[in-house]
Length: 216
Image: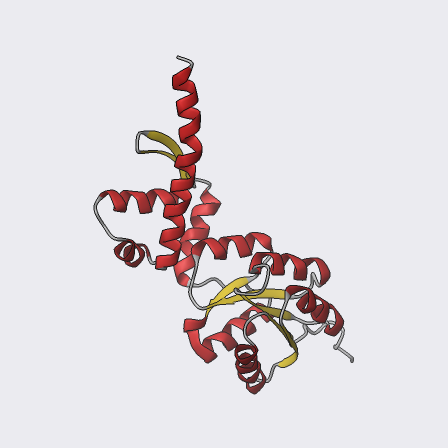
């Protein structure tokens, strides 16, 4: 009996990242017995290749032009049957959530190495999600819905995400961004992004406060 029509595709498309990086990933996956049909620079070509070759999975580099979220959406629209994994040099909690919301099936930190990449691809090809252990807590937090809380920053009442509040609480204790990153299992870049987000919310709230005071 011919089962080719019901068997999941083991064809992979690589999208984004430096050409040498894509070549290395291609080599790793092909040695594991996977068929890498194409490796391309951008999301549009990646989605087109996924549709053309009936890919079972698209591996998207987090540094892809236009961003990995846009790339995930592009693939999901053009090749909805293909699983999508985002691979990045480090686990970025915010990027993980954004990618999953856009339709990604998982997130792969490069720190897992060649064997970890192969395992992640195999898991996604079976139809399962690939979520690093460090990212599970963030997803659970989102599902619980308790992601916003009111916090006072410089006398302003701001609505912060739970993670932003965590970062600010540690800043008040005198911890450095590096120490905060270590304690919360985040990258230093992510901590700085949270701090920037809080600063932006404070700037947006301050003009409103001043306006209210001027009319009192």
